[in-house]
Image (cartoon, rainbow, N blue to C red; front, side):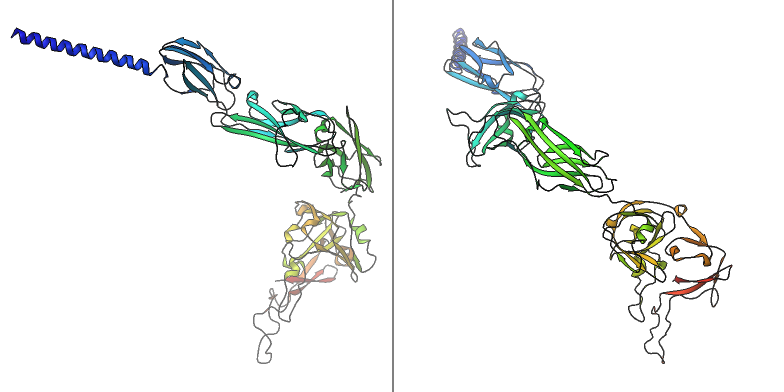
Amino acid sequence: MKKSIITGKLRQLALLLCTVLMMSSCEEDYKLELPLAVTQNELKLGAGGGTTHVLVYSTGNWTATLKNPADASWASIEKASGKENGEFIFNYAINPGIQRKAVVVINSGNNTEEIDMVQSGYLTSAEVVLAKKTLAMPEWGSTVSLGMETNMGLALDRMTTAVTYTTDGETFEPAAEGENGWISDVSVNEDFITFTTAENTTSDTRIAKITVSVYDNVSRKTYSASCLVNQEAENGYFRFDNPDTPAEVESFAKDEVLPWTTNMEMFFDNTTVTVSYDEPGEEWISNITLEPDGLHASILESTYHGERHATITITYSGPQGTVTTTRKVVQAEPALEIAFADLRAKLTAAGTYAPERDFILARVISDPGNPNSETNPKPTWDTVDQSESTRTAYIQSLDGQYGFRVKLADGVDPNILPRYAMVKIALAGLTIEREDNPTRYTIRNMSASNILETTAGSESDITSKTKHINQLTDDDINTFVVLQDMEVAVPRGSWINLRGALVMKSELNSKGLAGKSQYDCGVRFFRDINGDHIPMLVKE
């Protein structure tokens, strides 16, 4: 019995010893198989900057270094070496730009591990926009600034520049090895880039491309913008279109562009503009700016009686010399207000007159769409064309002395002349017609483009004349007149149908049509206290 107990204990001891030896053997194998290890090969870091500790597992000595120090100026390493298991400290600055990555290399003997330290940024993407996509330059050697917009203003260190050149206008390559390109000293600022051009001593225009880039080394995406620089083989210039013919501008206020071609765009800030005027009075050219497409200016409305003239002089003076040019400008004679009486006086007898300019101010006294505006024609014996009344309106002078009948052009909305409104009417393109016996005046071919201004009014704005019938003259035609002491004569009772068939269809008249319109209006007679009467056409 004792022998059996002892044997069992020996067996347990042997098993325990075997287990210990196996565990010892496994641990030794692990150390041999993993001479260098890290917990992970990529770490995510916040945009705000900070410090992180990174564990290293090794059976020997190890070092930690930045793989590309020039691209990782925002990072540094503390405790960059150790023996066996340990850690290094990774320090990283705040990142105001887009995401970025630094690579830490761990070396131990012949073993290497890399850890990507990926830091997020306050921006999700970069924006880079150059003010110009193409730029013409004179032959001079000079240093210039080109405007730029970017959201990377707090991370300009992430922005790089490159200059490439072309001889065929399509393939752009860096300057050949050992040669210097003609663009140099490119630098990036928050709102612009600067660069220097060498003098062009060739006889041809030469072309280079300046590219500004931001590289996202995490997603391997590049954000960039480019500008083609065309350096011509001639001096600076401003060349206006048709320089020998003065630029004509209208008499009314407007913004004007005087077109030109120029290679002086990068020197606009150092260019002066002066204006001299031939006629006395106001300075009518203002707000002058120089743009690639031409000289932009504001033209003031003219009240001068006749054309007026000006000369614009553009001058650049710099270390390269002086560039100057002039542009003559003539402003048309202004459209002036003409009185109704003066406009009527253009016609001394029946006939027509076509004004070339000027305008009238008038008050509308008719009501758009009122069927009593005009007598409509009868194209056939039993029909009436009611469109004539629709396109007829009446206006009078603001003092109520004279009036015009207005005939709108075909298809024009009669509401362009609302009742009681004061309207400014351009006369160019219209026809003034005079008829005699009685003498009356009509403006024909009125369209919406002739209405320069409309000011709403009311009945109280109408200037009227109060008269008896025997006081009326031809000057009162087409004006608002109050006839005093009047009575209306109504034939055949208090009511008469104004529209009906005068000739009804019957056995005696086979051409009559029941219910068809055969006349446009009925006649009413008005009589005043003096016994004078006047007929009035009244529509249905």
